[in-house]
Length: 398
Image (cartoon, rainbow, N blue to C red):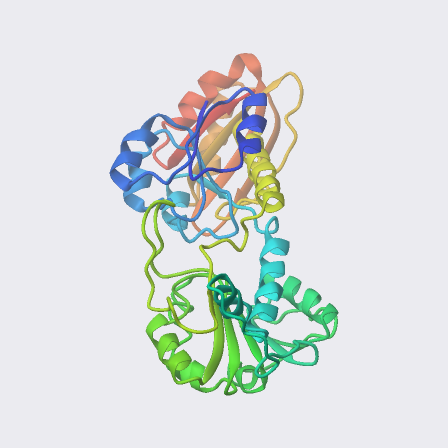
């Protein structure tokens, strides 16, 4: 099987996949859509990060594709529903870079409170900005976390160690860690917080959820951090709030429009504003995080391609069964409609196939069937199941 890894995914992923016998191509950029459409036709698996978009059109072009590995936390770059309808499994790495992002949040909070960005720039120019005026410790201040998931909760733990009071708001009920206290509304959080950090996914509900309305509810002089998704904040409104000094500073790691390659020019209305830290989407860009992600997602790809394991899949029913020695495995994705399993079992009965084990998991749209069969019977059985009108994808692994 052939696997394409894009966007300079950590080489450990290529190494681990090649050790499993896969033919792996690693490129250091995100191919433009037309180039990717031509490339992807020959691959059974693709690994991407945040810039490569697996749209409906791209998925249709990927006629041999079985699985997509997102070597990052987010999956918003993939049309998850359409991938599922086409029988394509999507994996991601929801935990591997949480510590890296959380550490950067705390570092940027200290930098904002001490205006380190401006002071550093001035020192490089020969100016000596030595003063205590307007520079503060973060100890004893209140941090408001919007989105208390994997990253938000890690930020919470580190913030407590810094001596911060931690409050959070999430649309779902979450168990507080350490000294963190939930707030019932985002307005309550904004009114209390000296620092506000955003850790929400990109969804229709979070798109431009933070505008001048929300910024006006923040304490005067408070700081805003966004290391989640670029479309969460209305950038022009943030510029206005910074220029009016209602917001005392900001650290932004993600942007509505980002360069596709390191050589493309980056432009933002936030450039050259005082006490504004701009970083090039590096929240999870540490060697430790990328190594961990490379291991995690490559293992998920291997488990799926070699044994049909969907454990940890983002858009598929989760199935993880060991392949018994001496059998081959038929894997079938089908529309979740009444009677499909009966049709498959009828084929099994007609062929007199010896089924060692059979497991079916479903969601509202698809069924995922795993069957272990005697080796001599597997190909005829798989071929007939594949021809069923409601089958989406069928393959054999051994």
